[in-house]
Length: 363
Image (tube, rainbow, N blue to C red; front, top):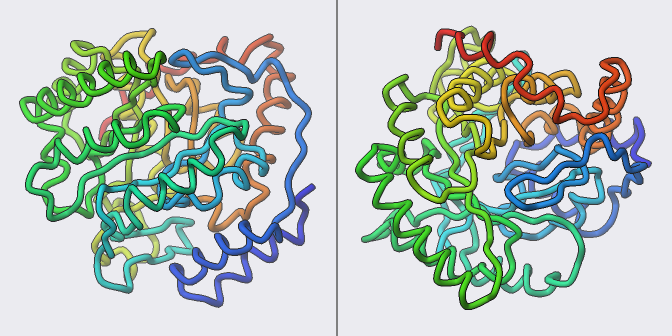
């Protein structure tokens, strides 16, 4: 069981710059220095989303395990699912360092990594080595910065990882690859979804199973932009949305020095904006499309609020920088306690219970 010592060890990484600390945490997980957490199954937390049975609704967001180095170690921390990537066809170094900044007073993080990763082949080799292991592992796919045809890069990701992914996330919402968010514009999004979902249909025939595809969007969209995405999402056989990626907004931050750094802001300051966008999208796409809520989750109460705002599942990553590796287990156990308090038989019963309030939030 992960205890206070592990949290203290995580905070001790603050003596290192953020990117070095990240690498050390991956190394610790690979060597088994971070112990597994054994959680008793709570059937009230289990649900089927996009055809996948999740033991609990708490997942690791993409960005931590970019190269599929530790998916099984993360699942052992208590996550109901994990997502590797973003992975691009070719390896790329990303943007110049330094490119990650802690906003300790705000419990936030700014990054401008730029899809740094080892490419398809490295992730494919690691996922192939664990292909018979249990657990839900999604693959977050992206495009290389210098790609002549970015849509072709997403199609390549679908084809490369089809036999290995439990689900795919099409990431068009990172602010750190110039022009990437332009794919959220309606005409571009239509072309992207048509290409990706056509490739998925072809691979489904070849492999005899259909792998769900989710679209990850930004929190900085206008109401009109949300309308366009909802229209295309519902016009295609897309399985769900992930709301949201990091934000370029800097509202209300205490650390004004770090706030000046370019990049996407995540962690606690993202919670309100991302939850409002989540609810607005749920209202637009209706009750049946799967929605995963991401942004600022650091407690069971935060996770449940995302669900009340319309999420089926939640993901987090940045808040573990401050809370340590025990956070997923703490949230899962906390959700069980909240269900005791609410006296409901399934967490699904609480979805949308604060949808209207959040959907009316001004961005």
